[in-house]
Structures are given as structure tokens and as C-alpha cells.
Amino acid sequence: MPVLGIPLDELFARYGATIEPAELEHQLHRFGCSVEGWATAYRWRCPSCGTLSEGGEDAAPPPACEGCGADLRSAATPGAPAGEVQVLRMELLAVRPDLFGPEGLDRGLRGFMRRESGAPRYRLEPGSFTVDVDPALAGPGVHRPRIVAAIVRGLSLDDARLRGLMKLQENVHWALGRDRKLASIGVYDLATVAGPALSYRAVDLDGLRFVPLGFDPAQPHSALTPREVLAKHPKGTAYAWLLEGNTKAPLLADAGGGVLSMPPIINSEATRVTTATKDVVIDVTGLADRHIDKALAMVVTSLLEACPEAHAETVTIRYAGETRVTPDLAPHEVVLDPVAAGRLIGVPWTADEVAELLRFMRHDATVAAGQVRVLVPAWRSDILHPRDLVEDAAIAHGYDRIPAIGLAAATIGLPQPREEAAVRARAALAGLGFLEVMTLALTSEEATYRKTGLPDDDRQATIENPISVEQTMVRVSVVPGLLETLAINLGHAYPQRIAEVGLVVHADPAQETGSAETMVAGFALAGDGLGYADARSALDALLRETGRDAGGVRYRALDWPLFIPGRGAEVLDGAGERIGVVGEVHPEVLTRFRIIHPVALAEISL
Image (tube, rainbow, N blue to C red):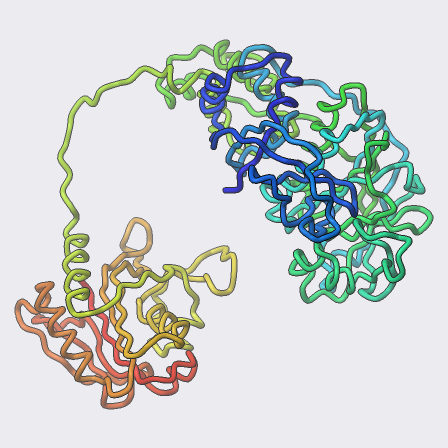
């Protein structure tokens, strides 16, 4: 996980008190934050965009500006840091991006430390700005169809607050936005924006030019097309994969046609936010409303925490046939059973106690008819189920205060027979000179049957909602993984001897889960001069060492596309049941994997 540095001076200034390091670390661990330690961080001002970026303890500048991506280690960079600060190093947990800045962490700690209770209130007023959304953004040429936006007025930004805003953006990009794929945030100086009608549209990659953030407008050739941004700008090259294959680019423009940004890549230099900025426009673009709504709520409320005198205004988003008003800072309601919550944690809570604990975690909570009615703030993205609120209550109560309960009875565990067989097989294969590999348990019909030549008996356990075409089923054999491993190790010395011991799965309606697991051992030998006899010799030794030859085994010719005709066999046990296969891999199969040496392999059930 990435590590975040929280400036202690900013945190303590907001908290209103100084906490000794050991006590702060203890309380943060109780709060659920993983503290990595303390450090002195040096800050460097970007000569291109003016952003303060944080370097390491060696007083060397970071490789790139956190704002525009410019190289901070070039000869043009000033030789001395702009300042130093003591920081608290915390591991970023993707479940709580609302804690990624001093403002959010202070908001959480004020409740956890019993200084405040309940959800804070933020001033949100109706605004006049609108965003018209081009239907083409939902098309195949550029698919980034959703946007939300807000106005925040009355800011007072110093270097620390401005840097905190930029860091929050990038951290939310990582945690909630999946590195900008699901949500990307833009912040613009409202004084540079012609309003109130903004447009979010798809443009040709060579359709217009604008000066991206960090480029000097006075310099020739600083105005780039979207295609040139992806090829020349540091942020463009870093995130070009998000628009890979698109024929158009998303663009946010103002009423005068001025470019605010090219989501999800880079803002324009003309709308850059500085310490002189008083009012800002914030937008979040992405693929679905849930992610961008939560991201916008986090950024807006963090800004309002940093500048309590500021207020937010809504923006009307106009799609074809749909209108939304954002940001939506209304909480969502969850009803919690306090008896079930206490039983789950092991503490006999009353409804009033659960409500009080949740208020310390910055929720609004009341008791009605023995149930706890919880209003979850809009900036909490991790509350998806009542169990998540039970966890919050347990954190506020303190896991260290939950009474220890001894075991009523003790049992002594024994290893499963199949695991013992797997241990014996691994030891035997290692003794035979094989290098153990571990391949993915998820694969596809293409890789298993059509590429490898294994027979398709339609007994695979398929994934109902696969995340990719490469992971649509659970493996039915380790053979495809062994061949794929040989294919990606062509540059290594030959001969190669690799083996894998692991589980394969077949669909089985008779089982409670609808599928049955089998422990198998497989190996492959690759190299000139290796063939069936070598694989058969190794297999005989493996059968003997694992006890699979008890009762006698025999071999029978097997006609599979995986093997060269006449060079493949199935292994039968004493009852005539197939327990494995062995043979020389057919050249057509080797060609599909681009393997250039002969391969012999075997696989048996343990």
C-alpha cells in the first residue's frame, strides 16, 4: 500500500492541541490507521506550476511534480528545498480515503477522541452553474459518460492548504478512482472560467489546442492537441492507457469555449488554482455515479473543513433525458439491530450505547423502537452494509476493551489427507529435479481447451461475472499453466523441468457448492532430446513416492489433440479408473504457445 505523510503542524493546528507522538500513534492504531512512523519531509516548489511537492528525508527533490508531473530533478530546478516539516507516515487504506488529509483525519479524530459527536454540517446553497453533457461520451469512441460538479466560494488557500488539496486529489484518485479509471477530479479557479454554462463533450484527438497545466503559455508550441497531450505531457504519457483505443477525447469547456480540462488526464494552465484563488469549480468524471458522487463529496467537505468560512454551491448536470443536481451531501439511512451488533462483537451493548458510539464515529444516530437509525455522511464511501457500522461501533468502543473469552473446549487439528499427499508429491518432484511453479487458478475456455487441446467435457466451473476474458472459469488442469510458464521463459537455459501441485475444480451438482476440488500434481520437461520415455520415467517415480502405484497401475494409449499421436497415454489405477495422463506435446500446441523446444508432460490426481 502507498504511504501518506500527514504534516503534524497542520493536524495539530486543526485539532487544537498537541498530542505526544507515542500517544498519537497508539490512538491512531486503535482508530484503525496503520502508522509507519515519523519523518522529516522536505518540500520543493515546481518551477512550472508552482505546486509544492514532498520529497524524502535525504533532502533530494521527488522525481516529478505532484501537480503537473514536471521533472523536478532537472537542471532548471532550484537547488534548495522550499521548506521542511515533520510528518506522520501512515499506510493508505483504500476503505477510508476520507482520512487521506489533515482535514479528514482531524474530523475523524475529533469524534474518536470524544471531542465532538455526530456528523458535521456544511453550508450548501443552490447555484446557477450548469454542465451540458454530450451523449457521445457514452459511445464506443470515448467512454467516460458521467460527471458531477460543485462550486466552492470564499476559500483562503495558503501553500499548505493548496498542497493538501492536490495531495487529496491524487490519493482519492488512487483509492476510490482506481488510479483515475473510475473517478478523476479537476479543480479550477472560478475567476478564469466563463460561466455559468459549462459543457462536457467529446472532441477529436486533433480537433483543438489548449495549454496543459505546467506549460508556459508564452512559449511557442505550448498549446497541444489532445493527441499531443497523450504523447508529450508527463501526465499524458502516464495516463494515456485510460484513453487507449479511443477516437475522441473528453473535454470540459466553459461558456466561452475555454478549456478547463481534458479528463481524466490534465487540467489547463489557464484555470490553474493558486494561493490567490478564492472560488473554485470542482468536477469529477468517471464511469458510474456512485464513485464520482463519493469522490466529489470527499473533496468538497475537505475543502470546507480546511476553510470553515467557505461555502459550497450546487451545479446542475444536464444529460440527454436526465438532470442531476450535485453535490449531494445528504446522508443515507441504515437501520442497525443493537442486539445483533453486540452479539457479533461480544459486548452486551444497549441501543443507546451503540448510537453514542456511532456518533463518536461522526455518524448521526438515534434510537427508535429498539433499533438504531443511522445517517451515514456522504463522504463515507466504505459503509455498504450494516456490518460496516458494527465495525465502526467496535472501533469507537475499542477492540482492546473487548473482554477476552477462553475456549470452552480445545481440539487438536490434523492435516487433511490430500494436503499430506501434496506435501509428499512436492518433495518427490523436488528430488527429481523439478522447479515448483504456482500458476493462476482462474483461466479461460480459450486457454484451457482451444489453445492447449484438452478435451472439453463441459464440466468446468464458470465465473458468472468475470472481470476479464482471461478469467472466465476455474482451472480443470495444471497443464495450461505449465505450458504458459514455459512460453514466458524462452530466454532461460534448457532443459527446463517445472512442476506444480495444486487444486483443480470440476462442476459437480451433487456437491453442496456445485463443484468438486481435486488435488493434482503435474510436471513438464522441455528441451531437445526429451520425450515420452523421460516423462514416463519421472511419472513412475512420482507414483511410487506418493503411493499411487498401490494396487498396480497400467497405461493405455490416449488420442488427445494435446499429444502427438502414438505418444500419449492415460494412467489407470487397479480398478481401471483414469488417474492421470502422460505424453509428448503436439507441435501444433507448442506453436500456439510459441514454444520452440520439444515438451513432454504428465499430470496425476493425488
